[in-house]
Amino acid sequence: MKRSIVHSIFLVAFIFIESTFRFSVSAQEKDKFVVVLDAGHGGHDPGNRGNGYKEKEIALNVVLAVGSALEKDGRFKVVYTRKTDEFIELHERGSIANKAGADLFVSVHCNSHRSQASGTETFVLGLHANDDNFNVAKNENSVILLEDNYEANYDGFDPNSPESIIGLTLMQEEYLDQSLTLASFVQNRFKKILDRKSRGVKQAGFVVLHQTYMPSVLIELGFLTNNTEGKYLNSKKGQEQMAKSITTSIIDYKESLDAIYKVNKPKALEVTKVTAKMEGDKVYDNITFKVQIAAGSGDIELKSFNFNGLDQLSKNKTGELYKYYFGSTSNYTLAQELKDIAVGKGFDSSFVVAFRNNESIPLTEALKASTSPN
Image 1 (cartoon, rainbow, N blue to C red):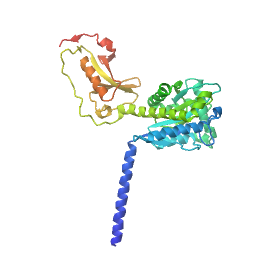
Image 2: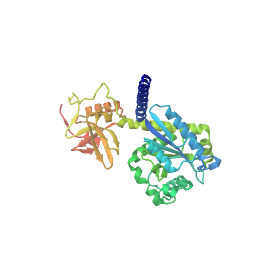
Image 3: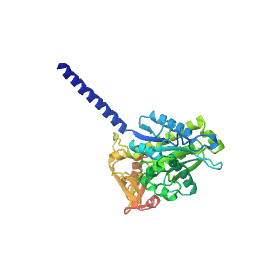
């Protein structure tokens, strides 16, 4: 009897400890920024074979290098759609990202062309602006024809039809701004740090991006069909450099989000309302100065913890864009001090804006207005 009781107590204790450990690990995982890395093609789908190189191998090598670097940063959790030379259907790639609750989806590919075209380009899901964008999307989408049951998986989607591609864009609209931000980071680093030719950030209808419900980009590393670029991308040096550039861009993207969304413990020095007028200050009649700290398509609640401890918050909506402001004063000197506080809180791109009768006016016009005597 005693042995049975002791065994039961031990079992309960073990279950409690295990469940507590799993809860702790789970809580830690939820705090991490989840990035899904997708190496294009694989298995019996080699991708393009420009100059005899294999797109599937180059994409996988770059993705594994990016993942390895991010995994060393405790802020990230990395999920791969494939880590070996295997064929993963396009709809499964999106499903992997959705099930992982990903914060970001990055798909890596290599381009091809009949000419010696060269350069990197990063795509987000959108209406193709020209025939070139459509042809790139069509080439990448054509992989679905290799799948056993593609008619059912993609509900009649035709990779050769512009009309089908237009129908893809609606699901990703709410993530477009964030996707464009990451795409810009990627292209800027390729151009400025690696000195690669940039073909820019573009929109086109990629099935693999359509399947995801988070900010998503598709990176074309360059053209394997270009003699020089193909050799570079097939080299260990080229793959390492491209991977490092993508890794840094992902980190920069996360940190740019943190500046607005991350819940930070307020610093010891709190922002308080300052209304006293100092000697030499310029107080303008019928003018209100504010500090613009952020702008975006997301409607963020005006709570101090959403803005790194800043209070005195306001916002307005112009078209589809929300603009967020800190402070409100007719004292221009004070407005400049408020800007310094915002910068100190992490909003490095803050700037002073002016309003008259709640209507935005140019700052130069505001500073021409009459001032009240001290």
